[in-house]
Length: 141
Figure 1: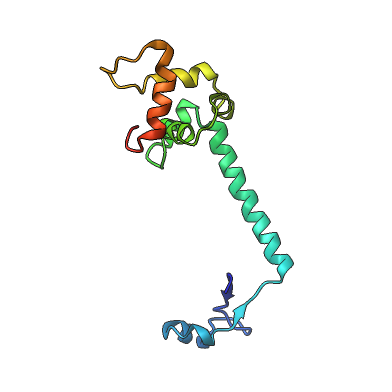
Figure 2: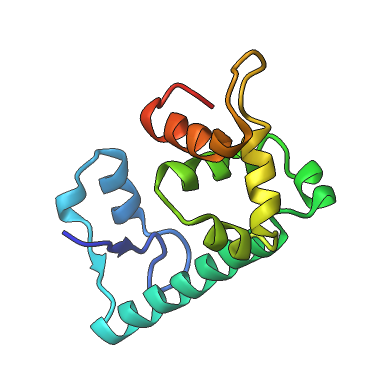
Protein backbone atom coordinates (compact mmCIF):
# COMPACT_ATOMS: atom_id res chain seq x y z
CA UNK A 1 0.00 0.00 0.00
CA UNK A 2 1.28 3.49 -0.83
CA UNK A 3 1.33 6.45 1.48
CA UNK A 4 -2.07 7.19 2.97
CA UNK A 5 -3.32 9.36 5.77
CA UNK A 6 -5.87 8.85 8.48
CA UNK A 7 -7.97 11.65 9.90
CA UNK A 8 -8.02 11.93 13.66
CA UNK A 9 -10.73 14.60 13.59
CA UNK A 10 -14.44 13.96 13.20
CA UNK A 11 -16.67 15.69 10.68
CA UNK A 12 -18.41 17.45 13.57
CA UNK A 13 -15.10 18.75 14.82
CA UNK A 14 -12.99 17.50 17.65
CA UNK A 15 -11.24 14.17 17.95
CA UNK A 16 -12.50 11.12 16.05
CA UNK A 17 -12.85 8.74 18.99
CA UNK A 18 -13.35 5.70 16.74
CA UNK A 19 -10.11 6.40 14.86
CA UNK A 20 -8.19 7.08 18.06
CA UNK A 21 -9.48 3.82 19.61
CA UNK A 22 -8.46 1.87 16.50
CA UNK A 23 -4.98 3.41 16.61
CA UNK A 24 -4.64 2.60 20.30
CA UNK A 25 -5.68 -1.01 19.63
CA UNK A 26 -3.33 -1.13 16.62
CA UNK A 27 -6.33 -2.11 14.52
CA UNK A 28 -5.09 -0.37 11.41
CA UNK A 29 -7.39 -2.29 9.07
CA UNK A 30 -10.49 -0.58 10.45
CA UNK A 31 -9.18 2.94 9.90
CA UNK A 32 -10.76 5.05 7.19
CA UNK A 33 -7.90 6.05 4.96
CA UNK A 34 -7.70 9.37 3.15
CA UNK A 35 -6.46 8.53 -0.32
CA UNK A 36 -5.45 11.51 -2.44
CA UNK A 37 -6.44 11.78 -6.05
CA UNK A 38 -3.56 10.79 -8.38
CA UNK A 39 -3.18 14.37 -9.60
CA UNK A 40 -2.95 15.68 -6.01
CA UNK A 41 -0.39 13.02 -5.16
CA UNK A 42 1.72 14.00 -8.18
CA UNK A 43 1.49 17.67 -7.24
CA UNK A 44 2.60 16.90 -3.67
CA UNK A 45 5.51 14.82 -4.95
CA UNK A 46 6.49 17.66 -7.28
CA UNK A 47 6.40 20.14 -4.41
CA UNK A 48 8.43 17.79 -2.17
CA UNK A 49 10.99 17.36 -4.92
CA UNK A 50 11.22 21.12 -5.49
CA UNK A 51 11.92 21.69 -1.78
CA UNK A 52 14.54 18.92 -1.68
CA UNK A 53 16.29 20.18 -4.81
CA UNK A 54 16.32 23.75 -3.51
CA UNK A 55 18.01 22.54 -0.32
CA UNK A 56 20.58 20.50 -2.25
CA UNK A 57 21.34 23.48 -4.50
CA UNK A 58 21.84 25.71 -1.46
CA UNK A 59 24.28 23.22 0.02
CA UNK A 60 26.10 22.84 -3.30
CA UNK A 61 26.35 26.60 -3.83
CA UNK A 62 27.66 27.33 -0.33
CA UNK A 63 29.73 24.19 0.07
CA UNK A 64 33.16 25.81 -0.16
CA UNK A 65 32.23 28.93 1.79
CA UNK A 66 34.45 28.73 4.89
CA UNK A 67 32.01 30.55 7.17
CA UNK A 68 29.08 28.41 6.03
CA UNK A 69 31.08 25.22 6.65
CA UNK A 70 32.07 26.40 10.11
CA UNK A 71 28.42 27.06 10.95
CA UNK A 72 27.41 23.61 9.68
CA UNK A 73 30.07 21.43 11.26
CA UNK A 74 28.86 18.22 12.76
CA UNK A 75 25.80 17.90 10.53
CA UNK A 76 27.22 15.26 8.24
CA UNK A 77 30.00 15.40 5.72
CA UNK A 78 32.81 17.88 5.67
CA UNK A 79 33.97 19.10 2.25
CA UNK A 80 36.97 16.77 2.28
CA UNK A 81 34.67 13.79 2.81
CA UNK A 82 32.57 14.82 -0.18
CA UNK A 83 35.72 15.17 -2.25
CA UNK A 84 36.71 11.61 -1.32
CA UNK A 85 33.24 10.35 -2.28
CA UNK A 86 33.42 12.06 -5.66
CA UNK A 87 36.95 10.84 -6.42
CA UNK A 88 35.96 7.29 -5.45
CA UNK A 89 33.02 7.57 -7.84
CA UNK A 90 35.43 8.46 -10.63
CA UNK A 91 34.15 12.01 -11.08
CA UNK A 92 36.44 14.13 -13.25
CA UNK A 93 38.38 16.79 -11.33
CA UNK A 94 37.18 19.52 -13.67
CA UNK A 95 33.58 18.55 -12.90
CA UNK A 96 34.27 18.50 -9.16
CA UNK A 97 35.92 21.91 -9.40
CA UNK A 98 33.04 23.41 -11.36
CA UNK A 99 30.45 21.95 -9.00
CA UNK A 100 32.18 23.50 -5.97
CA UNK A 101 33.30 26.79 -7.47
CA UNK A 102 36.98 25.85 -7.36
CA UNK A 103 39.72 25.43 -9.92
CA UNK A 104 40.96 22.03 -11.02
CA UNK A 105 44.32 23.02 -9.51
CA UNK A 106 42.68 23.75 -6.16
CA UNK A 107 41.01 20.34 -6.11
CA UNK A 108 44.26 18.67 -7.14
CA UNK A 109 46.15 20.52 -4.40
CA UNK A 110 43.65 19.40 -1.75
CA UNK A 111 43.91 15.80 -2.90
CA UNK A 112 47.71 15.87 -2.85
CA UNK A 113 47.65 17.16 0.73
CA UNK A 114 45.88 13.92 1.62
CA UNK A 115 48.99 11.90 0.82
CA UNK A 116 50.35 10.71 4.18
CA UNK A 117 53.69 12.01 5.38
CA UNK A 118 56.40 9.51 4.66
CA UNK A 119 54.98 8.36 1.33
CA UNK A 120 57.67 8.99 -1.26
CA UNK A 121 55.54 9.73 -4.30
CA UNK A 122 57.16 11.67 -7.18
CA UNK A 123 55.40 14.96 -7.95
CA UNK A 124 54.34 13.80 -11.40
CA UNK A 125 52.57 10.75 -9.92
CA UNK A 126 50.91 12.26 -6.84
CA UNK A 127 47.46 12.86 -8.31
CA UNK A 128 47.28 9.37 -9.83
CA UNK A 129 48.58 7.84 -6.57
CA UNK A 130 46.04 9.51 -4.29
CA UNK A 131 43.17 8.94 -6.74
CA UNK A 132 44.00 5.24 -6.99
CA UNK A 133 44.43 4.92 -3.23
CA UNK A 134 41.05 6.52 -2.57
CA UNK A 135 39.34 4.32 -5.17
CA UNK A 136 41.01 1.06 -4.15
CA UNK A 137 41.12 1.37 -0.36
CA UNK A 138 37.72 2.12 1.24
CA UNK A 139 39.35 2.58 4.63
CA UNK A 140 41.74 5.26 3.39
CA UNK A 141 40.68 8.87 3.74
